[in-house]
Length: 541
Image (cartoon, rainbow, N blue to C red; front, side, top):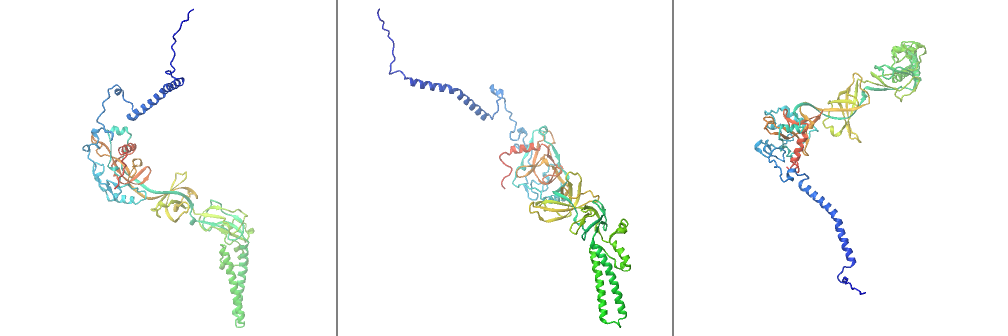
């Protein structure tokens, strides 16, 4: 059998790749193939962000996608949001600009209509009366009169709408500038108190025990009425001593009279001794009478001196007790030690701190009587609000949780401020003829600094703060002349005064009869800010 030689090709060792190189190439190809997906996703996101950045994130219209973009309207003013053909800001010939008189240093506004009434948006030029100028001068002296920045340029701006319907659709409402009653006030926490000048406290003038209580809390009293009877040993002792002193005085007087009759037969020294004894007896009587007076018991010496000792004792036993009260007690059992506690003022008993049989002394008040027909109102007012507060000004008080309003007058202003709160006490007197005011009633007190029945006022929502000045939007006087008349609101700087019940006083900047934007005026302010974005409202003078 013959052997066949097969020619089998053999690889050349010098030209073939080693196994390690082939493995490295395979890993590179695998990484490239695996990274294609994430790289494609990242490139997609980058393309989307680039598209949004250059198109302001707005989707193109279908016509643009199909290669047929819709024509853009040329008659539109992007800056002022009205058709360019009627834009008064871009075309001065459409509407004459308001004359610029600049800053009024007298009234603190720009283009002051008080000094230049021809600037008012009224059909006829108004006349400024001396009363209006005086009113503005007075209002400007008040602390709430807020000033503007003289460098503000916002007053030169105008806000325009395309039509009357556009104004209505924007929700802008207007209101006529009118005269209203405006009050300028300062307020503070307040408390009603008893008038201390009409209040009195009564205690026993000597130690003892309460024999009887005559008045209770709430009882009306007149000056001289007995509040209670105190049984005091000192009173009985003084009465007894008085009777003995009167008897001694009478005896010494008679002795002196006898000696003077027989003075020729009596030694002079005896006369002197008798006169001295009489003087001592009289001094003893006066001393005891004075002690009784100190206890509030008045003694009629002339009347008692004419009575017998028994009659004098009976009269002294009821000393100081009114006859009407004597008839209410048992005469036979009444002690001579009774000391009446009397009220020295008319009013009502507001405190009673005693019961029958209680032992009392001179240190503890037993009754407090107050005349409630007049009360005090004490207010705490911030020190910075006191500049225009004066005695005699009207004040109103409303208690917490009450709808009733009480009026009075400022009576006194403290000369010191509280060291902790820096508040100053202000006192007012409140009449209380019906007795409805209560002691220690808390509430709010309002001092009326100024009342102006003819103030120029507008709704507070019509006023806007532009960073350096307060402005309102005044409707142009030719607004309704024709459908083609520019629908324009003028920016007007105003100086404000007091705010009262949703209305704000305009010290300067507006005149009665002008029309201002109220509800929805924020729309005009937003347009004003948009038009002036980046420019600011003030420039250096």
